[in-house]
Length: 87
Image 1 (cartoon, one colour):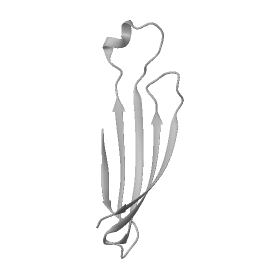
Image 2 (image 1 turned 135 degrees about the horizontal axis):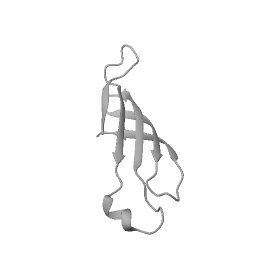
Image 3 (image 1 turned 180 degrees about the vertical axis):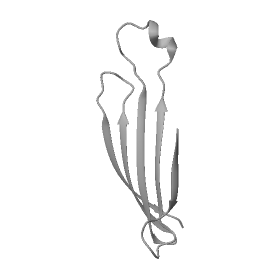
C-alpha cells in the first residue's frame, strides 16, 4: 500500500530516520473453490526509528504487526533491533 518516512524526531540529529509503512495482500479469487476457509486477506504495518550513532554506524528499532493470511494463524507482533556498520 505504501508508507512515509523522514528525518528523525529528535532535534539536532539530522542523520536519524523514521518511517511507517503498511501492506495489504488480497486473497486470490482462484482460491474460492478450495474447501474450507484456509486463506484470507493479509495486512501488515511496520514502524521504525533509525538512530545514527556515528556516520558509519546506525541502530534501528523496528516493530511490525501482521494480520496473517492463513486462517489457522493468529496475528503476530514482531520486534526488531538491527545494527548496521559500514567500513
